Image 1 (cartoon, rainbow, N blue to C red):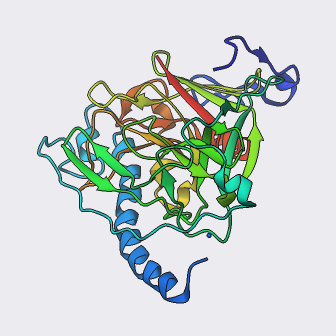
Image 2: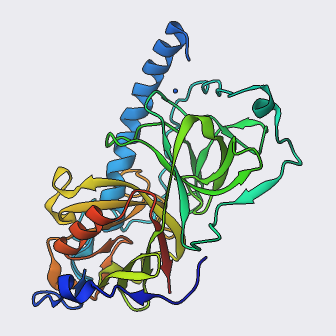
Length: 341
């Protein structure tokens, strides 16, 4: 974590420093052989069909509810039932063989490899994000530097079920996978990254040869005790906004995560406003939602701006459309999201 103090952007007031009359708060706003590749395509299509359901369910799962009284009428009509849902296993395929730049890189590390974190000495807010290369189809995952190739499982501890989760390079929304780096080994050939599965905060090791690297210093702080969303670049405050967050029975969890993709809200539903900024974290009170989907979190717009300041969602955080649009245009995929209380 970086320093606790921030300073407001000195140029902010002249551009965004105005009251938004209709909202409470303020707007400050990849090789494989041909046969193996074909096998992968077949299996991948089956997994993708299930994953589409899963992904779209995060939209309903975490965001339903217009008010406390009518929340049960939004999304799946059985959303408040406590019966367990067992999620089907997604088929997987053998991972790609990782490329090696040279023999020394391929053999470096091991159990005693030196590890280095990714915080910059010059900018304590700077983080590193890995964006998967265009020719990659599926990313192999390991339990350590030069470790064992492992399978990922999303653990639904609420319902006592698990879902195999191949780490595909493309999301169901057509975006390329982005992973937040927690640390590197001494060679830079390996990175420990956050995984978009439960439990929240799960990490694993990947080989950096599959990715390109980007750095930035944007971060978002969502304070559920105050129902606010603040966006920073380094120490400069860019946005300060009253929000809607999870109701008492489905609270927005306290977690450190990141924006893993941006989805135009119009492609989903007017209820999500102009943009959905998907967060690589999940509800900690809902096991599944809407027939078995993963209850993923998001920061998104809304078609009910009059609810700002209330605790009425199923875990997602809503803010006015013009604010979410500004954030979506300003911050990169990989932006840290700290949800605090």
